[in-house]
Figure: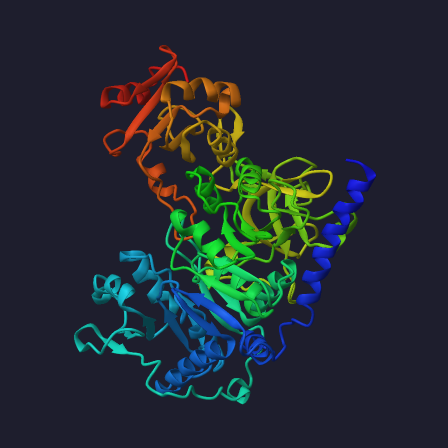
Length: 599
């Protein structure tokens, strides 16, 4: 890289960092400025600007505030008080953000429940929320019917578009009867509430088990919302397209905050649609969109759209955009800039890729390393524990070496760790005696590597990386390689156990698209991956199960393994004798498990 290019890169980085740090100034644990105060300040400044567009309806900042105040009046009527919790079980809709903002005006926390959950997972989230009241709608209430009897306590369900129903414990939450919206609750109603008190509970995606309730304090919510308002450089003329679920931090706090704290407009859709994405972007004159990486991959795999370049987008921001998709996405759709970030709902490790270097999840330049409390520590894949030296301290990973990302825990805005509602689960995420005796660091559970310029690259989730033939296999890196094969629309890689063999063998679940040729895949994998990293088993299925935030679920795939008796889909075995993929049968399965093949 030339000197001029390096200077330009550092200017982009420092400019983005300065905007972000300026936006979060003044946030501290004992502050009495809460997330609802930030929203009300924006309302006062941009009262008659359009704040939200949803299904043909436009809402000004003043109107959204009026809806929020109606929720506060409702909470008052139920006798709710500061410190209580209300569950919100809704799809994306205009009332979603005003609901939790209105409750926050009274110091009431909101538990944001994934409206796609059913059965045991839904019952679990409602139970651990601690809420006695659930705000829902006709679309979501049906899922409750099957689990209501098994809940540990009786909940009252308040439908914002339904009627009273004593049999189902459903009551109408009327947001329209009074023609004039109620006044704001006095700020004195939340006297004693500080920024370190809980504003929201946001649940983990549950990719490996039941979701956990992450505690989102007012301080953390402010950090999300203000930092993205600063990092994206949003202004009152911007329109941000959001199809991500509002029950999750990326859409519900990062995307919402980027727009609503700066007078911009959120163009909200109920859920992501490949078919309607570019129509919405162009027709609403959007200037930004918020993404999860898989959303971009779906668009890249889609047929050409007449409006895919007929837009005014200047920025896409989000996380999880894979390197093999990044460049193709920006070039095909003429998106000038991508702002990739890294962060977890409950953690204190966050970073931005202000430079737009494809594939990097963030950057900490060497000259600023002391100002950022994130480190990569060496990690033993087999024992799934950090590697320690003779003094019991963790060993930092070398340049380019994968290590677990950890963040120093302190009681301030940037380093605070609030954890989960479950104290035991919170403690499991703390790593002690890392750099010095007595210190405490948040464990991200993510393996990363960092290059000489300070760029961080995601390697894998701990537990996903496995050992085979004495080597560590990154499921993410293998999936990225296979995803380059024509017609491999979706790829999910994981390790499976073979009896009598050490480690785990690689297996790839693939959703094929147009032009996919299984016979050619074997040769492609042989060219692209070393022997130890090549999946021995291929599972062909019409779709790969994801969470509401497009994360792949692996737990069921690992449980099925390569047993044809457990799996309804085709399984193929890379036969070492025939040098070809062979369809798995119960007889072949038994042979493999008996050790008949040298693998």
